[in-house]
Figure 1 (cartoon, rainbow, N blue to C red):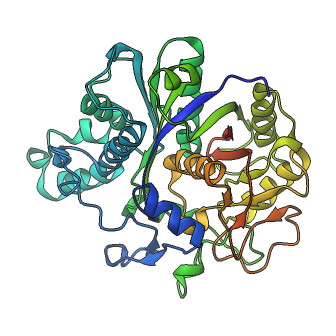
Figure 2: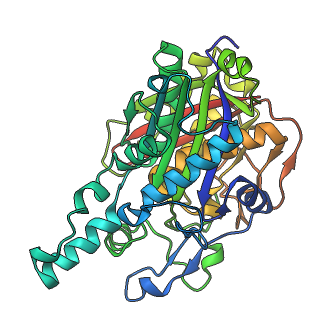
Length: 406
């Protein structure tokens, strides 16, 4: 292993699996789905989703959160947990210009934009909130986090669709490696469970129609899978160089040791039929870390539960890592939180490395015979995990792969 390592010293998670790392990890290891019907989706083609449970900005102490879209609220709440675990205090920086924020999103403040558009049509332009644009912008989660913690370093918001959170972590590592930052708050945030997004995904036939049994609707790699379940949330990590973490006596939970990115250059929604772009990203991450596929002990797959993605991704994993690769998709629990998926799943991969536990693929009962890898399901797999791969693939053919080690 010869790549540059960025230490993960803190993790924050706000997802359908729970508020906080502890709740998340317990639910993911148990392999219990969070999908359910929601009354406010009544009348739409699909009425089920995976929502963050009992989320209250006020209870979490997010002052002024009424001026933030839900996705920004998730990002700030997750950041505060990550900083606390890292032993860092917002605003008490040795040099705030050396603290960077990179938070990606695919949809941004879509709930705000949809609601304000409704007000525009029904009540007129004089009733539209002056906060509509600041709340709806794709960069505002990163901006609100930087404001909340007093970070004056680079503040970036990659928009690579469902790879955005992973892209943010990979770019955060690059900022540290280049010497432009000492600490990077990196991840993704998303709150896309809205009428427009649900309806659009349903019209694309991307969502599961297993409406009679929502708890088993998200079933990655299953022979009977028929689409994903829309999710939401945020995953944030604190990144530092090993030297910086050691100098301040911080505990390293895991390390980001490789990053690869690519484009399918094929289609706006469908993955390349042979997984060309995905394979390029995985191989680039391995080359960046100075590793081979055989060094990878666990793959947290993109695994969306769609008919195309899961078979194509499994083929990439088989070719690059091997048919004995241990693979699972945590989207069976969380659904698909779009731009937040990559960072949430990178956090789960880091926890798998840290705890020596591979979480199972929830709701999987019959592995698709075309999926020729070792898909972990039914129960968690216990044992040392030295290196994990986390895959993220987005619309537009934008791919990101992260390698995480102990």
